[in-house]
Amino acid sequence: MNRLRTLFLLSCFVLVSCSLSAQIEWLSWEEAVKKNRQQPKKILVDVYTDWCGWCKTMDKKVFADPVIAAYVKEHFYAVKFDAEQKETLKYDGHTFNFNTEIGRRGSHELAYALLDGRMSYPSIVYLDENRDRISISPGFKPADKFINELNFIKGGHYRTKTYQEFLTSLGKK
Picture: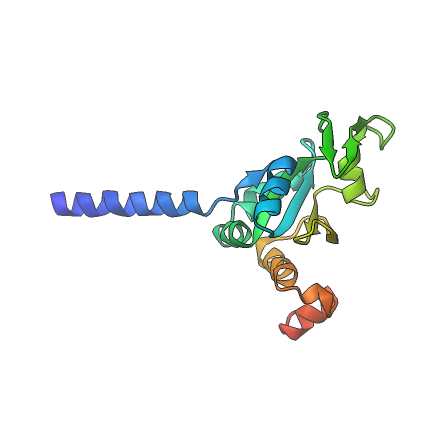
């Protein structure tokens, strides 16, 4: 009986350890830029708002998915960026502030710049190793679709084909 109990506890420990290690390490903008300068890697920016229902669904159903979390953790620096945050950011010689003139509720100027003024939530912005924008991907995507997008970006396929061509090459539509 003790042996069975020990095996059960060990199994629980392994499951908890695996689930903790499969979480996305969300960084601030500044942390991601700093890490990227030290060791270049693509950056995934989740532009969200606190009131956005689909943003919360993305957190619960997609970013919490162990396959997605492990893939993002391995291949990207991940940033959660509140489009309505009030904190000033200095980046690349520019100062970005919360601006009440953007949209109905106001928005952060960096979010506005990242999204080219198309303020839609959630939106994922992908940046390359030089922090140049690769693409903007608006809207909720379930995990089984989002993994394709991550593969498209991580693999550099965007350099030679459209996302639709990439999906077709995988036999998906």
